Length: 73
Image (cartoon, rainbow, N blue to C red; front, side, top):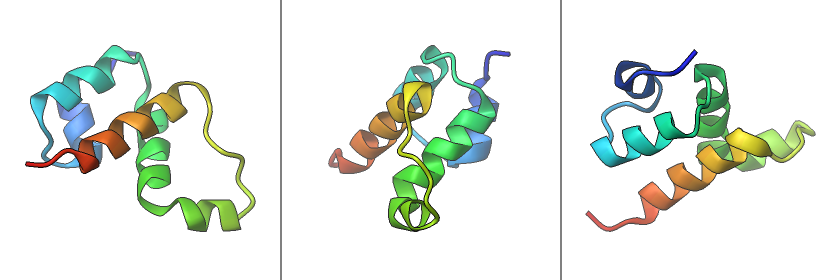
């Protein structure tokens, strides 16, 4: 099921419309976005739990989220 902008902002909070569109364009699920959000904000804890590094759509989402944080406002 394709996510809506409301689905994206429910997980990420208020974000730029461009990021919302990029996230939706990946075809990811809400579960994948939530996992990517966790990786983007607390990767050391997840690695400490022995989790495998993200791949596929989750990895793509992590890249989008990290790039969005790095952009100056």
